[in-house]
Length: 469
Image (cartoon, rainbow, N blue to C red; front, side, top):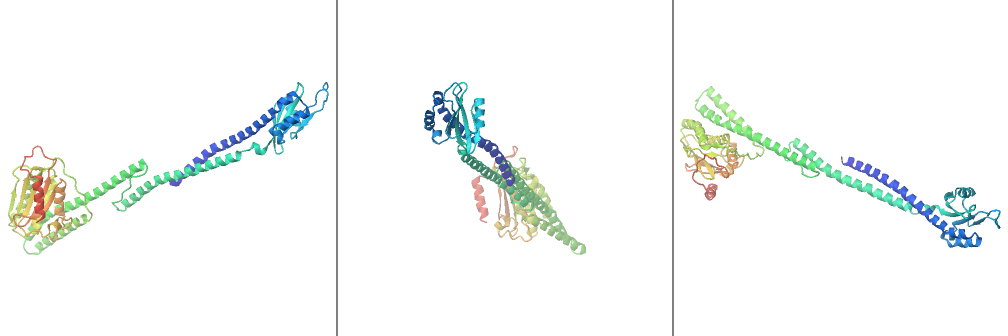
């Protein structure tokens, strides 16, 4: 495209220069010719008054010598012989004649000025009537160099201007082509890079408006592709993690089958299924996920979701001799989180309790409804977590062997989608307490009851205490 623009600019400029320079050069040449012959006509007219007064040779020679053309030997006067009734009937010829006799007779016959080509230039033949029958002719010699005086210089100037225009147009076309080609080249490179799996490839938003618009569209598309891939990985990981809830039930039930080939095969199958699910989770979590979007304005009822999930986990807790306690779900508590997301977060935390604490370990779920936030506490009486900071790190469960770390990440994404956060500390039961802070700033369901106010100062203090655990 760049060289095509240069060639087009070159062709157009050359045509314009030729179209204007050639006629202008011819006009300049014609103007120089007219100037030279105009000067000759003025020189010829200067001798006219003398011819009208006298035809005396001496007088005419003095008149010719007084003119510029006569001084340079370029003027000649041709006076014909007088008629038969006039004395001294001899013709006069003053100066050097260069025109042919035939040209002189033609001018006398036609009675108007004429230009004859002579060796070394041109001869202007100007007729002057002496009487009704006699016509004198003043001959002015115009050399070739005077006819073309200044024409060569003017043509050189025109050629220089035309060449400058051509070079300038080519340079401008080249810069313009470069300005158009570079953004297009960047766009093509980014498209190839994105096709090769380099999801970070982006296009600089520069160049003409059309290419800037294309760059904006490409970058937006690339962002959407990255977001879709991240959402796909998150969906695969979340679905795989949710499979661990029924897997926990299967593992607990398989543990109570006793001894025997069938029981061993069932436990081996459950263990293999757990390993496969863990592999899917780790594969899906290899790339850095994107932050999930906040839930819709309708949200869900925390109390209802907690009751539903505790009904499920309480049955397993009874089988293992665990004490389960729930508090703060007496009334509806609306939050801006999708029901399925909150249920997945609770299942992830409760599944970790059953998976990583001994049988008989008590656990509890508490809901605190504040003015600007809702706090969900999941605590247990187990051994606790040695490194809470590492446990919150993505993909790292901090010391709980065999865990993918996705459970806490699901919980954190749910909290952060509302502007909240997640803290891990020591519970009143003696084990681990996971505190989910769900923000309500700028959102409140119309039918939601007003609970006690958990102000920003109290929240900051709670955060500091939790971080110190």
